[in-house]
Image: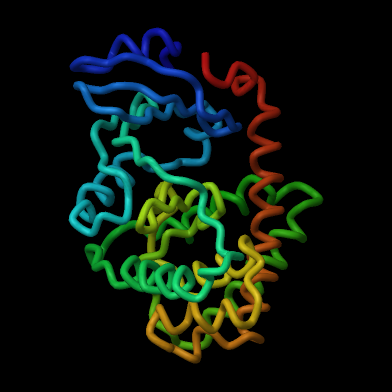
Length: 265
């Protein structure tokens, strides 16, 4: 992988790097200007390459859903060198425990339903299943494989309800949802086909939604009682907790590899 300086030099058009917004094992994110637009740039680490994150797929998806105005506009991608640029979206991290909880929950439910209604090509890659297979490969010969097996077995059990898979965001953490008179969803690298309850349960878990808030969310989503059954959601939350642990273990394993020590070159 090119050094950070070389990657910056490879970007076409007018580009000015701004200050760093965040850094993780997977990427570094900066403010920037790109062809006179306020934008955000992400430089992937070697760890991201090992996770087989498909930035071209993410870029194409963002382009296809641009008309919905629920995600940043994709501006540039260079998958080979781990570079992604999207238009800067001004807003604040979404919070819901306010005096306007009823309306915000219904609005969020409607936005999630919009995501789950997006049509994608029939033969698109099953990113979630591919990720699960990768995690298994990383942990297969370690003592942590038992945790993965718990997660995998529970996931397979939860899929037995015959609910059709939909396009899912698959990473609905607090930092990935912004509010600016509407909800905007960030970081679509894991987006792909999944059971709709995965996204719903992620919201319930990550925002610690109570029964009343879940009910308002379901109204915004269009009152599909089967998807908002509390017992079912609790099982999905259990799976998500397992999966979060599995992901952390995989990141730790990948980050410990000698070639990943200098993650961003």
